[in-house]
Image (cartoon, rainbow, N blue to C red; front, side, top):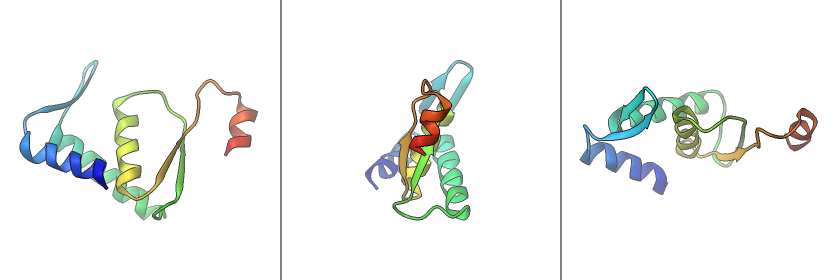
Length: 94
């Protein structure tokens, strides 16, 4: 997929480049690539198959970005849920 190809390319041409900076959290491109790759593998090991939908309920953070990239890498489709919805609304969507 194009998004993971871009991540791999950035890791190869900018091995010391900063990919994520949020508060105290900092990750280089190769660190980000490793984390995303490992999470994608874990999702596939848990049964995620190409085209499966993955509902996510999370605030914006480096971990959310990693999850987004990992879902794409594993062939899934991310379904972001609005954190402001009530429980019953979320339950209906899921």
